[in-house]
Image (tube, rainbow, N blue to C red):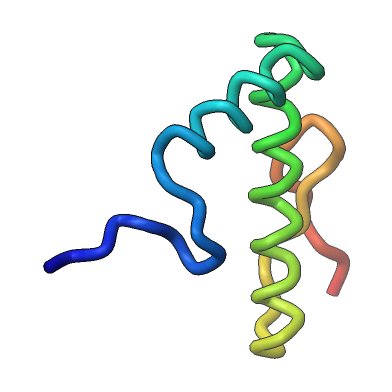
Amino acid sequence: MLDTTILIGLGAPEIAIILVIVLLLFGGKKIPELMRGLGKGVREFKDGKDGTDSDVYDRDGNKVNKPL
C-alpha cells in the first residue's frame, strides 16, 4: 500500500492547515515575493555548490552584464 505522508508524517490535512496559516500571516500579495526570493536563494546555493558561474541579476530581477 502506498503511504501518502511526507517524510515527517505530514498528511494532506496538516499541509493544508499550514498553508492556510502561512496565507493568513503573510497575505496573498507577499507570498509570490517570498517564493521568488526563495527560488533565487536556491539557485544561488546550487551555483555556489557546483562552482558554476551564473548570470548576475539586480534587485528587480534584470540581468546585469558582468565586468570581465
